[in-house]
Image 1: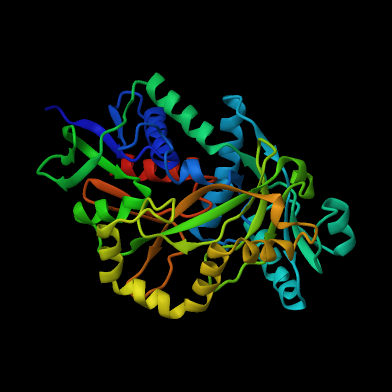
Image 2: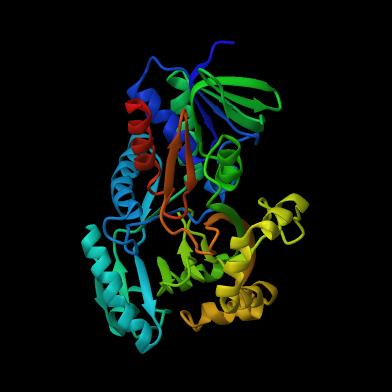
Length: 398
């Protein structure tokens, strides 16, 4: 069997972006993308909020900050070239208390250091001008924050790959991966694939496959389900753009927020509860193997001990719609329980270290002929083309 030059495991937005970038820079290369699902973008890419993040939260000089800003421009150009709608909505990070208002200055400093355009702090009167139903003591405005359909972006990436001579093999689960003498041996349910180089961009399963290929033991992936509601169409006018809370720096999840999508639909959420399966989109989705892995990983218990209060709050919000709406109503007092309809959930692949710490930045690492995307939380979709650019540079230099 003749090895392909590059095999990408995972047909989410990052895996597809890497394949496209490789074919752009090495048109003569043979590139194959493998995925166990019957469509691209079946998991995190197809279940996120669609926000094109401007980069206001990320520490200056971090991989997140650098690739987010680079990625925004690349994604905007890609969408224009492929006639995909990207709508600038603007985003308000709303402070509801004096303590939260004081934290806005630090976010503003980070935004300016990262080169985010147009950010500033506004008061209640301007909040009301922009979002008449929203209340707050102050807010940071990010006027360039936009929304896009990442599923459509992924489909366009897939079309580019095929038209450039690459292949995308769907419905073919990768069950093993190891380095051989002269190639990487990738075992799938349909047989073996040999590759001179492999890239693992498998999202919820990235740690499992990376370890199987000889990668580091940590970080490990813990799945967190994000549960959403949608505003009823006749109440969608309560929110014009994106309304976010002031983030808690001790916790990686932003909390309940409002997002007006490209379609005009307004999502409310998500909360963040530990899922009992790596594909635990529903409460009844349970995997004995996944639960066992989580239970045996010391980082799971250390994370729980350090964050149990936040965990209890999230569980309450999951179990009680009234509690969920109460949080959302602190931004939009006119919101009523009946205004919210259930919406599909997503599952976030959160990387956790053995000591229980949550990995905040992107983790991109290689060993031998294998390169792994070990952690790609938000804003990974925004930064996907820039992440692909960086990974491809590493691959072509090796």
